[in-house]
Image (tube, rainbow, N blue to C red; front, side, top):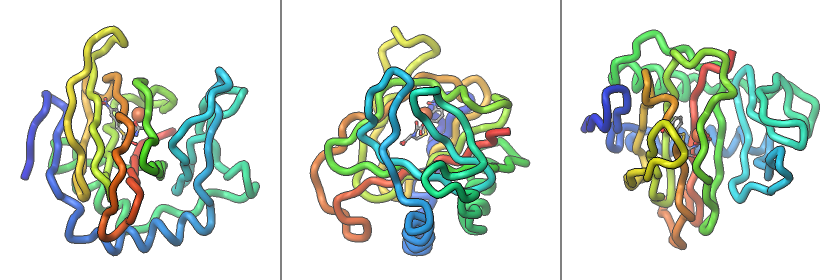
Amino acid sequence: WLERLSSGAVLLHRRASDIDALLLAEVEALLRQAPPRGMQTPGGRGMSVITSSCGGYGWVSDARGYRYAERDPLSGLPWPAMPAPFRALAEAAAAEAGFPGFAPDACLINCYAPGAKMSLHQDKDERDFSAPIVSVSLGLPAVFLFGGFSRAERPGRIELRHGDVLVWGGPDRMRFHGVLPVAEGEHPLLGRRRINLTFRKAR
Ligand code: MD5
Ligand code: FE
């Protein structure tokens, strides 16, 4: 079911549940081609989430800064193509949330083990903020922090569960957000993992 969190933020509860095994099989194949790796923030801190990408652009971070790159720096090869079911899910979810015509060219694959977290941040490495961001959660649940438009605003909390799809568009696209440390647990399909697919228009 559809829950509107704000004018441009829509939570599609369990929207991806019926294709979870298909999505996971695609994720496993992608991660064999481009293994998830820890990134260093420009400040020199290591992230607890390990990340890979598929599509025309992948998100990378190192001492030089955050950016989108056409090649995987580990292999020197282009990122694996975005699987058709990924694109179809992201486009359909965006349309259901009121953003028809979404054409993602990047999909980040964020892998959380228990204890991994993502600190409060804004997504602003993309060229065009008018495109929404679509986030698909798989595996262990997590508490998502959904903040305001300044870091100082106290964020709200929502639980994201296996199969949930969140669409952030319009002004809500620029909210500060993060993920609390994932609690220990075992998911029937994914085991001790949370995987988040984040679809963006990078260029
Ligand atoms: C995650 N990933 O659960 C989240 C899902 C990231 C990231 O934050 O940058 O890889 S994406 C949630 C999101 C994206 C863009 C805007 C907003 C939330 N928002 O305005 O709240 O691994
Ligand atoms: Fe983000």
